[in-house]
Image (cartoon, rainbow, N blue to C red; front, side, top):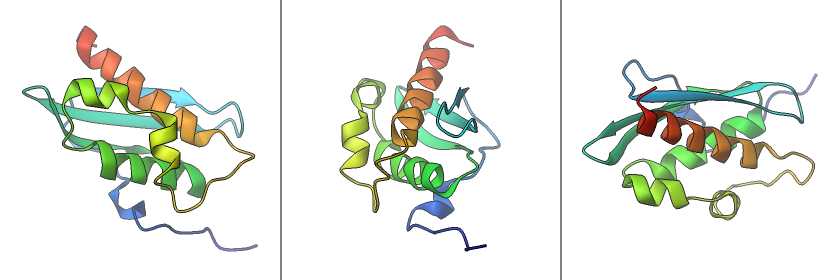
Length: 116
């Protein structure tokens, strides 16, 4: 069995102890969950964390964290899958986990807005 591939932002992917909202999005590709937590303070995404199970999703979430952390809410809402893909070390053309990670972020933002 080959070892899991690692990426430069992997260490950023960890659950937050304190967060404002969270969301879980299920990958239809591998059937694994992508959990995202956000900490919002004064309209700014102060921190992002979460859990993922595969190395590609970890790369996607780690990269998303490095790019979105510190953004205001409006900018975070406009962050797209294309923005993410342009910054990944490796894009897996067979997997849509990059899209699912952005979807989980948007669900967490929606939950924050609704106070869920």
